[in-house]
Image (cartoon, rainbow, N blue to C red; front, side):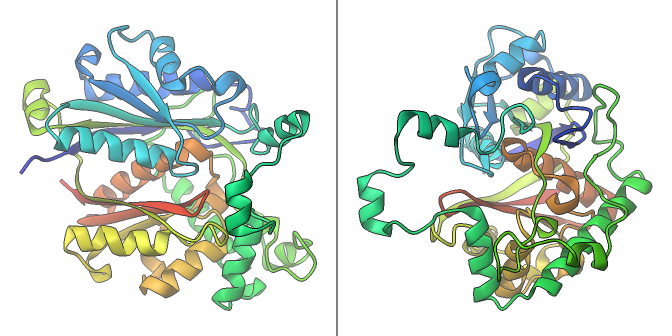
Amino acid sequence: MAEAYIVGVVRTAVGTRKGGLAGQHPADLGAHVLRALVDRTGVDPAAVDDVIMGCVNAMGPQSGCLARTSWLSAGLPESVPGVTIDRQCGSSQQALHFAAQGVLSGTQDLVVAAGVENMAMVPIDVNVGVLERLDTPKYGQGWRERYGEQEISQFRAAQLIADRWGLARGELEAFALESHRRAALAIDEGRFAEQIVPLAGVAEDEGVRRDSSPERMAALAPLREGWAITAAVASQLSVGAAAVLVASEAAVRTHGLTPLARVRSLAVVGDDPVAMLTGPIPATHAALKRAGLGIGDVDVFEINEAFASVVLAWAKEVDAPLDRTNVNGGAIALGHPLGATGAVLTTKLVHELHRSGGRYGLLSMCEGGGQANATVLERV
């Protein structure tokens, strides 16, 4: 059988909305990690078959096929094409899937999967003003006939999940506090140092709040009266980029590359678009089934912390141990640069498997529209 190997992973630090990366043009963020990926792996960039880049809000400076403009901004060969994709928060994880599928199919040998998002420059709610100016509803007639006029939002979905799985505010805040503690420890121990390529003087993830405490979290107002969801239990608006190089066995031999991980299985699922954020549950089951593995076989889980309720509900439903989940903190502490997060978490997962000596890692995240990707990696 054909194999798809991850032979290089690299990321920027994840910056905050007002931090040191906020003014970086998205194409320059992408160019930075693409150049670093080529330099670190030593691959001939002209041999790359395609560059697949995730980006959620492809507007303004993130428009015009960011994959192509990032590659060219990096000074890399014009002969290599690029394509930009949007599967909401899972965009660059889907880029990894497409890259691996191209290699597994035998039609490609070297594919870059990457992601970029500058949420300081292109805000998450950028579409709201556009829709208002056009005097156009977000959803068309077919959607409204199927789902009615009820609110569709990630914030309501996070609360619906908390209600369904009986997750109280205190439990969510305890999880969020632990995310900050783990992230701070990982930074202090230098666990991220090798995977980050500094940019604009930013060499560490900026979002960790070392002064977080139960008292400070408890003092925050909920997003709505009666809700358990507050800003403290949600991911941060962020800036960042990451890139992954996927290679065939032939490319590994030809270019003298060193495999870091094998792509063991891929899955993508659709789920309830109203609850929206529950997709990692069926996606995890699907990816493990394809890999012939069980939850107990997985050494490290990376489950995106869009909200604390998402990860806690996932852990309860699939019976996953939290002590092996987001061991270096998650998006609540480290940030969530939308289109880049899949590649960022892939980078973290590969490095953590090598640091800890684990064999299998699983990555999954919730996505807009009620979807989720899940990926099982095997350390090489």
